[in-house]
Image (tube, rainbow, N blue to C red; front, side, top):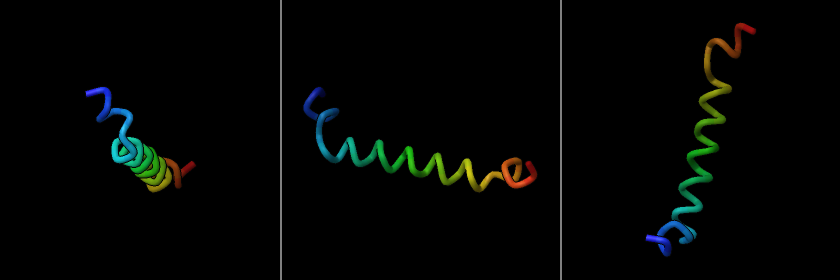
Length: 34
């Protein structure tokens, strides 16, 4: 389990998730309405 958490694949998945959440935050209508 620990090896899986420290694996590059898991790290890349976490980064992709962070990027996706950031993009979705910028694409929300409430953000554009200010």
